[in-house]
Length: 169
Figure 1 (spheres, rainbow, N blue to C red):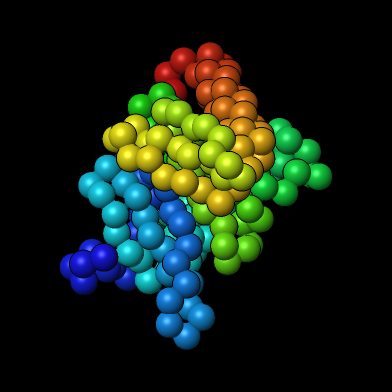
Figure 2: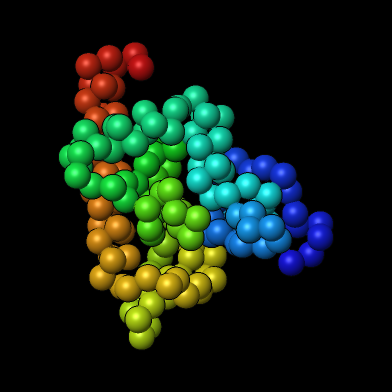
């Protein structure tokens, strides 16, 4: 990683593909962000980036989680969240592990064009052609992917209902 690719903060957009934790000095958790422009190392944890991005998009992280819980129920813990809604699509990211885990990755649903099982891991192909191997069973990844897709459809339908009720919106 080049020194020039290190930043103090990062805001998630639809150009963001994945945020993974990097454990460097003093047990501090940093993030490697994969996006349309390549990779960047951020001096914040993945969860901090997600929370700050929600805030920058005028939504509270806890409110975003609560919205997901209304759809999935209180018992689901690895909830996908919608960070923003632009150009007719929600920007949905999903965690691979518990969001509070320092080892958790966040992946943009929009960024994945394929995934497959590779031994006990999952290999994903991002929309720019990059292939990454994730340390998660393909069945777990597949479930998270399906839940996120269902959630994205739910958000789009809710948005459509609002637009139908208020055609000037």
